[in-house]
Image (tube, rainbow, N blue to C red; front, side, top):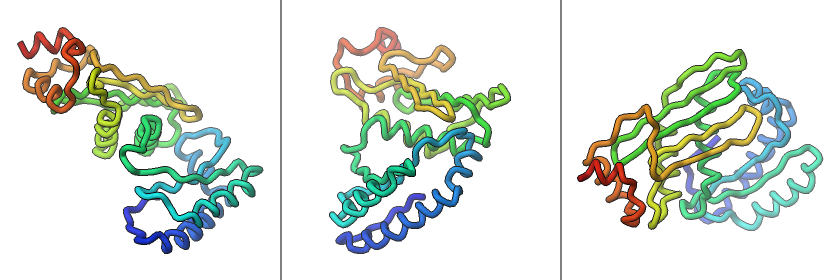
Length: 223
């Protein structure tokens, strides 16, 4: 569950976090969370994390609650932590986990492996989700607007002033395992059309890179 809310000086956050933490623990202990995971195609749940996301650091009272909770919940394989929502603090791994979670939410229960692929140069982009179900059937699913937005945020977050930004990539995840990601700053998938000269120029405006890091095919396209 997520919500966009201003807690002011943080006093209200302490009480709200206490209530929600108790509610989430109740959902875990009742088996509701594991049932939801099973319906989403996740076969095994070895550990459950309860994460508080916020743009500002919570009051010390919240961290004290987390410490107490972690000490008492370790035997139940439950942990509680805080994660910053400030763009400069969000790591690549966090973006990729969010991308996989959003993709999984688009799928019907019973999926085995999903592959998210994307290409994006300037304003020209394409992408999709290829999913293998437990029965071996392979399906293709369109990206949601939220998923497209997360991929763009990932591109911005991983931009390098010398090497530029990625032009294509893929993230693969099994229902019961960690994800694997690979992005290229130089290559596009064979099956996508060549971006126009306008889009390539826009890419280099949005994400400048060193001259010697511009691929030959981009140079040829823009003349």
